[in-house]
Image (tube, rainbow, N blue to C red; front, side, top):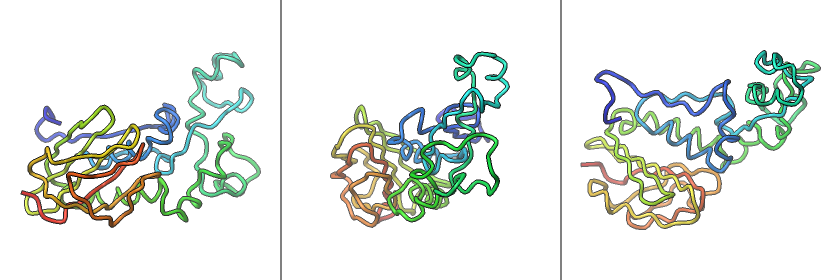
Amino acid sequence: MTHMPVGGTANWVNGNHDQSRLASRVGAERVDAMNLLALLLPGIAVTYQGEEIGMTDGFVSWEDTKDPQAVNTGDPVSYLRKSRDPERTPYHWDGSRNAGFTNGSSTWLPIAHNYRTVNLARQMEDSNSHYHFYRDLAAIKKTPAVRYGDLETRALSDSILVVIRLLPDTPVVAGIVNLGEEETVDLSCVKLLPTSFKVIATGVGCSLQKGTLLSKSNIEMSGHCALVLQSLNNCC
């Protein structure tokens, strides 16, 4: 971001139809962290369908393979190394037949095996889900600090990364990702930050709840947690 050309805009992409799904590449426990980065960093966030609910690659057999890259290998064993079909399986709308994708008898590619547990309908009913965290992030992205503010990032340890968005006379937004085990985060090193914060978004497995009030010097982060805070006072 320091060397972004004048007039340029960053473009954050976690995945697309040509690479293994985000949850399969980095692990389901890091989906919220990666979505947090894509939506809180300055610029445009691109979401490939399924990332907002943590969909993983599906298995596509040789018989069901459609990707020309895989078919052209002619090899029922090595085709998987070339196939892009696993990340192109149908979206999981719900736990019904064909994952609610179609009322037809079959789909172009088979439904991934975990669609009954990883689907939109189920996550809409669960306030502690990837879907609800993603929705909160999408709303936070529209706040003044995230739309127009400056960026500061801090790696506080091997596993803790903080993304801070600052705009004068506006509440600060701070995203924290913990890629390791439980840890206490101290943001006192960031002098511009107000002292008190409120939790406004929590990823799957976070012990802190939305609305919790915190001091910037003592933030208890559970393992593999992604968290967004907003200051109670304006910045700068």
